[in-house]
Length: 183
Image 1 (spheres, rainbow, N blue to C red):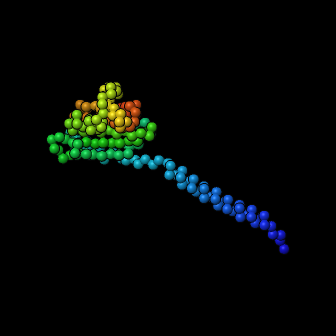
Image 2 (spheres, rainbow, N blue to C red):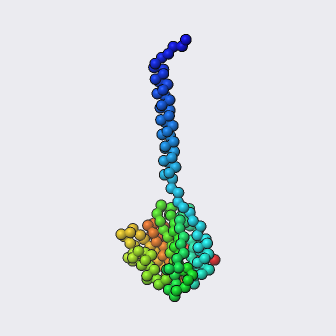
Image 3 (tube, rainbow, N blue to C red):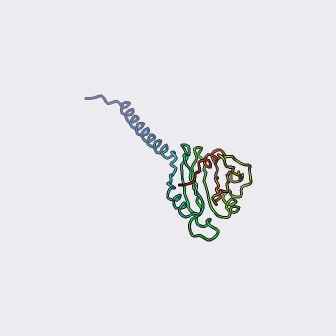
């Protein structure tokens, strides 16, 4: 015959309940931590760059050798902003990035009327000086209300290029400095 102790029975039930509670909390902590990891969608913009190079009447610029942490998140060809002469081929391209500082930046290029394209792309930003990037001078634009900075260059190849976003000028200059003619 064994000795039954009410204290032992209560302690066993308490330990089992506590173990179950700890297991549930660990599962919940794992689920919450897995959801907190940012999953930035990455796009391959090669086909858009190729299509634009084939159809546009200007030199297409693509980013090369961006430092680690730049993630291409969107790519869009747009015929609406394209050639003012009514050409059907896509002549405008916007390529978006998540930056290493968790901001957003995008490159837009088009052969649309430059003044209208710049106003729309910079969201009617105001002139804010210049940036020297390599051997090119880029005009700076700032839209304080939208917290958007932009770098603008009228490309001698017939297109206007705008690098814009919530990123600071330093990151925008990095993106602008990486642009090379697509071969």
